[in-house]
Length: 227
Image (cartoon, rainbow, N blue to C red):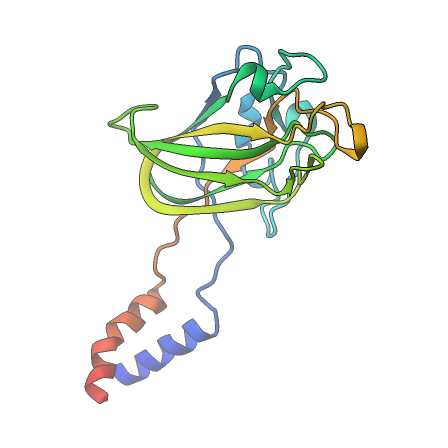
């Protein structure tokens, strides 16, 4: 009987019956270090599957413009380099409780300008540590695009893995955008970079072992004995 159960478990795993669509954690709230002057609100970053991005693979971005994107002001005016003028903005995401994480998904801001975030890093803290209280970090991560022209992807899900960690708060620091000097589109480059923006942020649920995989693990001693 046990041998039969082990055989069924192997068939289930090999057949891919344990593979499911990606799931994403709900994010409780979000804030930015620039929110008092942001052009479009940082709350647009956490609209989630079915609203901010397609709930089905490959999870393309759905919402755009002032109702679907986050972007800062342009303190240096146009043209200028936002990061050089204003520094690196920080977005703080609150998952509501300590959560096991090993991935972040991001969506770009706009393919029509170079304001989109091109590089970012992460810092994590637990509920007990409070916002900005932790020391664990990950990155830097580089988003899809061409830094020589400012071309960037504003629709595709971009997924970045990191070592598994438990955290409630995640600080996303914008290291750079796609600005190409002088920022006015000379030489076939994409104009902009006087702001910094993103389309969406999400965290994929860390999958738990399926019943078939657990059963297969339980079969290992039996398999060894047979050998």
